[in-house]
Length: 363
Ligand SMILES: O=C(O)CCC(=O)C(=O)O
Ligand SMILES: [Fe+2]
View 1 (cartoon, rainbow, N blue to C red):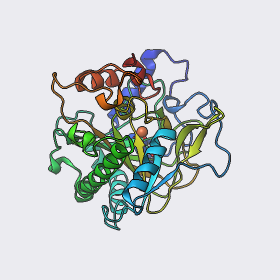
View 2 (tube, rainbow, N blue to C red; view 1 turned 90 degrees about the vertical axis):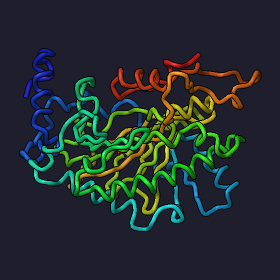
View 3 (cartoon, rainbow, N blue to C red; view 1 turned 135 degrees about the vertical axis):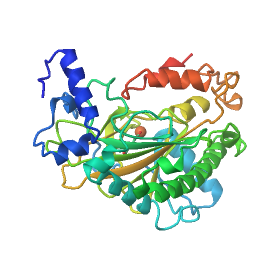
């Protein structure tokens, strides 16, 4: 591997060779790497912001509470943390999910290399792709992660393109997670004093991208990251994680101190988070916050499945911005309006890191 001072062209050639291997980071591990290759080395990945003191945790929203109480809890969590655990969602999610989907995704990523390689590629024409690092050719350092990505709206992927080993579980989970997202959007609207169908009527359940991540075991966990700090661009994310752990959420407390809080796996809990578009639509009432995935030092690879919910209406005459009810003369709009093609274009131009997307639309 090239040293970190290798000329840019050397790095580009190494990235291409890695991508051409078609087997992802899991393939590197299978080939027996005992160090993190330079392409994946992040300079001082864990330096900037300290870890939270023990006992600090993201809030919990209990769906078995009466609706007004659950709405108040969701609104408070979305305002103060941008993240929460959702528990007691058994009216919406069968008890064998999301476990069945997580196990099926693991089974895909642990298929023999040639079977995975057959699916590898970055094109999303069929709505399904398997690759390592969505921003591989744009980011300063690659991360220790492989992903199956699937579009479920506004155009739905061709189900027969989903690898058979995880096909039915992924399709089932998409339906269950959508039921959860609908319930969350109702609560979050209620928490803003809006008619409960406001977000759904703005088509926010109709654009869906699913990411099925696999974070292989890492020989030098302190030198790389699973996923760099970023905020999610969409409206709302529903995330299921297995029991390995590694997700961290940045939180600033009332004294203005920022730290990373472990979103440890909680059995029976989903993780829900606010995306940049919901921060914009809520005119900053709700916050989209940075999160990242650190490498776990253990002997087990981590699996997570996220679904990003976005507006499905993409026409050039459909504009998104602060909801009119929330942008008043006392509380003027903090963002300008834009079409989804402008929004997604701005998102695709950057690497994953930073919250620059929201700044781009700030008034
Ligand atoms: O793997 C995780 O826990 C987080 C994934 C995530 O933040 C993302 O895909 O945007
Ligand atoms: Fe994320």
